[in-house]
Image 1: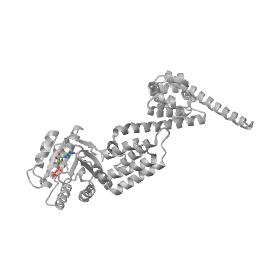
Image 2: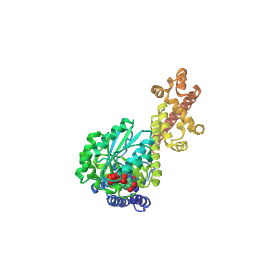
Image 3: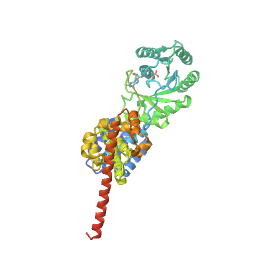
Length: 444
Ligand SMILES: Nc1nc2c(ncn2[C@@H]2O[C@H](COP(=O)(O)OP(=O)(O)OP(=O)(O)O)[C@@H](O)[C@H]2O)c(=O)[nH]1
């Protein structure tokens, strides 16, 4: 899936066809790749319809190309498909925190138990692993070894009763002061009903704080049905999708799971203990689209958008023909977001806003930071009516911002200069308009 989408992006950006033809070609390619990698067909059609609508309706901000803007739309819509902006909370809400892992045989449950133990151990928690998979020979030993490698507590018993092992294990771990307790369970039984019964019984005994379903990315669309059948018996709190390193079908499991409404918390990206990542939808999609190309593009678009805002602010000031410290504050904030002062120079109408070229030579980023600090120490009234700032207010502002009265004076001097220039600009514009009218009246 990843390669397919990346390739489509590359083709789209390079294509010499007109915009609409290129969009249609891209959408076809995207549909093909997503369906091939097991994303639900209905979901794919919904997604591409939305992308197309936005692509034809939205106008990119000045300075951005239509094609760049289109990729941004694709990025946003794909991100929504995988959970949008929401990043999962992985911090235990209380301690001890009992996690019960469920999932079918071979999904990577035992490996994930080890990875999770390491994940929480390196974040400073005291962790215990409990092996309650009595069905697969060797599962208990496998987990014991993982526990040793991760350096965490371990509990199991050589009996067949998984429910009792889990129950006594959790008690034991609590007695040892474990803060995160992870219970590994069986993935296979005589039949599915028995497996689900066992999960339900364990859950009843240990009342886990979180039931985590482990799903192999390779199972594609079946992920949804699987998640639902477990969910009926032991309400699933979160999901780990494993083996995303080894399959082109990751999108299937992810999107199928996404439509069940459960949160995907982690993804497994390899066999090693540290190959577990917190699932971040936007990061995942950026990877699908080929982050290398995309990062620069998104940055560029952000800049254009920010500068648009800056222009808007400046335009309003000029129209108003007056400047407050509050205006200046917002101007500096949006300018700082863009990064460089040079850009400001090109962007601000007439450069005069800040008091001309000479002034701008003196104004570097450090000065701007100081000004922001000073303005942050002012009251809203002072920002809106700077002429009320007398000597004693200056002293208070200087102390509050860790600067000197001289610094505050300096800022006010620049502000007054800029204000004067804005007024002049407005007057000149007014004169020009008057002149034009007279000329028109005179029949020019
Ligand atoms: N490439 C890759 N392999 C993984 C990942 N997670 C697990 N595996 C491998 O998948 C295989 C099965 O993993 P196990 O942890 O033994 O599976 P299980 O779900 O505990 O199996 P049962 O005990 O039968 O339920 C092992 O070879 C693991 O190394 C992953 O994220 N990426």
